[in-house]
Image 1: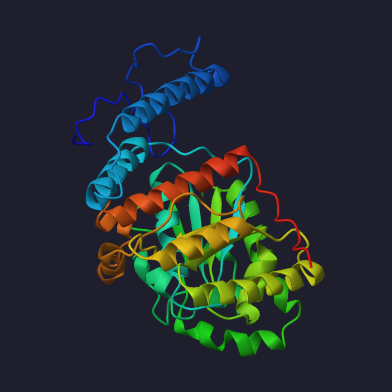
Image 2: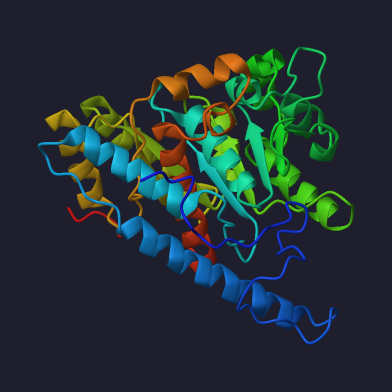
Length: 369
């Protein structure tokens, strides 16, 4: 059954406004007059609710493969995601959510997760700001943002006190997605920050000033701010933890990742106790999941047992398309939006947005000795 030809009733949506276009939708309630914004919002909510129900009904009608037909099962799962999520408008959070994407272990998919979740949220009608504080600048590369040495970057914000509004650039491929790039100068920022006043809170103050400035200008206020961290616990990562309310942890489905998670949680607790009492782990995403191996399933079960409220249902598989996309200066969401990797990140972004609209995820209970 081809997903693209599915008879799903969708309401055309304007990217600039995030509202339904002027095309009439059968059965949708209409506001009494144009100025009645409350009635218009109720009408849009009714259309979106009806569309979501139709998508879910169609997706559930697809056949389920069994363990003897893994390929058919994977194809059906991708088709269900495509029907349920493609073209959907994600709900906005009540206030801007600031999430630090962090893991002390390298190679677990921090940057890949940051840029692809950000792209998925922006494609679904939200405004997203990515702050790249990794000196490698991989997030800036994936978003097609210039970040050579002469470009104003997050280094100027942290060390020189430049307003973030002066360094942020819009992603050329995805409207609504913005990035504060990293340059090679950031490699020396760890040393330069040591002697500066309030060195741990410089990013926090820069983000707060940016949000206030965006409210009073024509620049859209971000619904989400995602901070991509280097794989270490230096002053750059500490700045990211102090600036955020939530930690988003990508975990590779291998044993070493579990060891790294334990140390990361201890460091987050240190930040909570001394610098940012509101910080908590709100989201965990399992990456590089290989359904053919018992190890991936065991790691996933272990993480879900300890963090049942934080782990997203969607997992991200190993995917060649995800790895190829940065070489083209793109995220997988624009490079191959129908690939299994893109659909997995789209599903993860939808979960993140739905949770944000429902309210903050409570911090996990402290471990019992």
